Amino acid sequence: MTTTLWTTRFAALAAISIAAGAAAQAHDANPLAEKVRAANSRFENVAAATAEGYAPIPCASGITGGAMGIHYVNGAYLKDDAVDLAKPEAVMYEPTADGSLKLIAVEYITSKGPASLEGQLFNFNSAPNRYGLGPFYELHVWAWKQNPTGAFADMNPNVSCDAMKGM
Image (cartoon, rainbow, N blue to C red; front, side, top):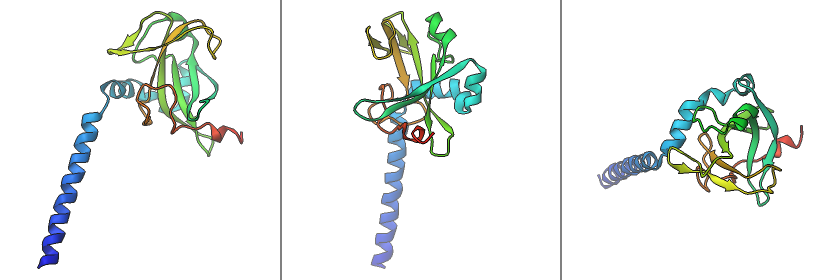
């Protein structure tokens, strides 16, 4: 009888814990990342990005670790300086061991600022910079791969360009 009672209490406690965890995760959900995901899920297939005029640039790794992945950049969107949720200037993919690309994030870029999207301020990059560009504002949105350093951080410690080394 005592074992059954403890088992029942343990099961109830586990159910409460799981429900609390799910509620906390839902509470911590990022509304901008959700909107970005909804507006740009077509890019899960890299062919959609190339069909819309995006072209790849090499995989970008961080100096202290992590990476941003391979950026597929749309030159026309870079030039127009508009910030449009459904038209990111770059779509970011992580290379995988089997040679495929997995959508992980998007990046919005403009030279006009200070810039924001849905209330989220962009980061400012002065010139000169490692990209060889003039000053610009940028916002990464890690909508498909969680970033422990934040949904809008530049580098993601959970992303790697290592799969590109053998190619």
